[in-house]
Structure formats: structure tokens, C-alpha cells
Image (cartoon, rainbow, N blue to C red; front, side, top):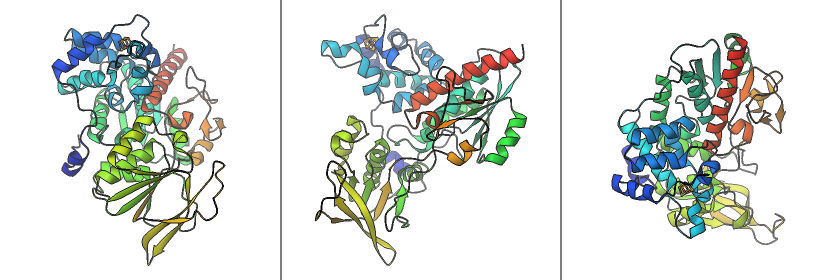
Amino acid sequence: MREQHPIIAERFPDLHPPFAPQAAVVEANRCLNCFDAPCTAACPTHIDVPKFIKKIVSGNLEGSARTILDANVLGASCSRVCPVDVLCEGACVMHHYNEQPIEIGRLQRFAMDAFHARGGKLQKTFSGTRVGKVVCIGAGPASLACAAELAQHGFAVTVFERCPLAGGLNTYGVAEYKLPASASLREIELIEELGVEFRLGIEIDAGSLAEIERDFDVIFLGVGLGAMHRLDIPGGDHSSIVDALAFIAAYKTAKMIHTTGKVAVIGAGNTAIDAANAAKRLGAEEVSIIYRRKRESMSAFDFEYEHARQEGVHFLWQTIPVGVSADGGMLEFLECVRVDDRLAPIPGSEFLLACDLIITAIGQSPLLELLESVKDVALDNGRVVVERATGQTTNPRYFAGGDCVNGGREVVDAVADGKRAAIAIAHQLEAAHA
Ligand code: SF4
């Protein structure tokens, strides 16, 4: 397992430090163990929240972790990255009593940290080998959940991934103060120990897909999304413009651990916030987020916005970039203009924003070239069309889940997709070989 670079560890300490054992029990004791627990209903993977919390109270941390893992094999990373305010904790009945919701995310992390610290392993539900070979394309959360579930049921699973490390956004794209890459890789080691074969650094294209179809019975597409949209303005190809995911991946893998000068981040989603906060923590003297609409329209969660403000990030609302000025190769200014509610430029409102680095976070394109090459798999606006209950595509041998289906939602949504598809794949293979 790779350890954090010391500078990254120092600058990106845990955003929500873990519970001490006694504090965890005190918090767990507040839970009312609701019969029809709305927290469980609000979790896309339907973790039995009152059950795992009750086991923390009784000191059964192993049982608590297993309750979490039964529903969500990435229970450790989800405990750190889930937007709990809008999921389980947002649904907690404590809100009705004007009390703080139970800190479900931190309790989940407490149980999962203890599990990993003890060297806990994932368990198989079937000890033999079942007939049928499955391949997952992409090693992000959807594929990991699918692969783990199938391996636990005794199927042979291979995962292909174009990056040198598995985990997708969990490893490369989540702010380090939420989820260190090392924590993501630790979860993947456990999946590997189930017998899942990871083939890393392999790009799958139309040609290799034909080969894969020959070698495997079922194919799960967990390919995520493609590159960030490019900045389509004069000077938008300057070498000091990077996309937010590449910027985050660079510091998480310690390829870049310092940022200097002034940074402009274009976009106002959660990835833009993560990149802006990272630039600040890596040493940028000033970081501004530029967004074309008003504050209330930004797609980042409210708590992410508040966090960025606390980090010292400035926000320029109703502003769009119109050009990039450079002096002899050195980036100088982002040329901006204010816009009205209909995004029309306001005459005379042009201004220059001094910057040394521009980070774009303006959405990702679908991996159209690959997806369009898959025979008989229908797409809708670049997203793979699936049957909701099974994740099966319009080609019965193909299943799909995660961002390539939903356009980019939470890690926990991808995990739910992967597990759902795995159960349907297992049924299909068992029926075919009965
Ligand atoms: Fe406990 Fe809140 Fe869930 Fe009720 S809704 S079971 S109080 S965490």
C-alpha cells in the first residue's frame, strides 16, 4: 500500500477526524434504533444503519463492519466521501426533535477503521467456483463493487483499468483530506484477495473489446466519464491551464506538491471546490472560483461552499472567462466579463483577473468513442441505457453502472449500481449453466 507523501499528509489532514472509542460509543448510544430507519432508506446501498450502530454500542466492531460490508463493499471510503448531510444524516429523525443528527458517517468510519486495523478480510458467500467469466471495464467504484460481489459468489472476475492504480476517482479524484489514496488502495487489496484479477495500465478500445467478447461471458461497463471539457476561448490551450481532475490526481500521487501565485478555478461544482481548496493548501497565494451564475445555482453542496470560504477561496459570481492573456508563454490574465441572469455579457463590465494557473472544472464528456463502439448497446445523450433494476444494457451480454450511466453522481450510487448488476449477472450466468 502506498503511503501519503509527508507534505501532502501535513497539508491535507483529516477533515473530520475519527472518533475516539469512548466518543463513538457515546454517539452510537444517541441512536434511537428506528424501526423503519429513514437513514437506511436514504442510503443508496441501504446499509442497515441502526444495526451497525447498535453493534458499536455492544462493542461488536467486527459485526458492525460486516453489517456495513454486507451492503457496501466500499463502506470505508463511502464513510469518508458520502455527502451524508443530504443522504443518511439528512434523513435522521433527530432533525424532527431539533437535535443534531446521529453522526452516521463518522460511526461508519469508526467501525471500518477498526476492521482494517485488525486486518479484516472480505468473506466469500460461496466457497466453490461457479461457471462463467466476467470482465469489468474500468476499476472505479461501480466495477469494484460488481467485481467483489461476483467474486464472493464464486465467479472468476477480471478488471481492466487504463490507469496504473485501481480505484478510479476514489484513488485519483477525491480530495485527500476526505479520502487518502492509500485508504482507497487498502480496500482494493481486500477485493484482490477475493481472487479478482486486476490488469492495470491497459486501455480498452474497439479492437480489444472484440477480443474481450471472445474471452468473457459477461462484460460490465464501469468506465466512468472521459476528459474534462476544454476551455473554448482564445488562449484556452495555454500550457498553464489544467483540468481539475488532473490537478487533483497530480497532488494525490505526489507528482505535484506545490502551487504558487494566483489561481483561477472555472466552474462551481464539488470538483471545482476540491481543486480550489487543494490549490490553497498547496501554497497558492490567492484562489478565485469563477462561475457564470449566482451562488444559489452552483452545483456544489452548501457544506462544500462553506468549506471553501473557510479555506479562503474567493467567489466571482455571474462572471464568464472570454480570453487568456499570456506574455511570452507566461500566463498573465484571465479576461472576464460579468453577465446578467440570462448569461448575456454586461457591456463595460470586462475586467482582467491576474493569474498564474487556471484550473478548469466545467464538466466531463462521456467516453463516446468507446461506448459507441459497443455493438447493440444503446446510448442516450452519451449515457449508457440500462434497465434500472439490473443494470443490463440493450445488449444482454453487457451490463453497466456508475458515471457512464448516471452522468456523474456519488461514489455510493456507483457502488449500488455495481452490486445490483453483479446480482443480475450471477442470476444470468447460473441460469445459462444450470
Ligand atoms: Fe438512528 Fe437517526 Fe437512523 Fe433513527 S434515523 S436509526 S436515530 S441514525
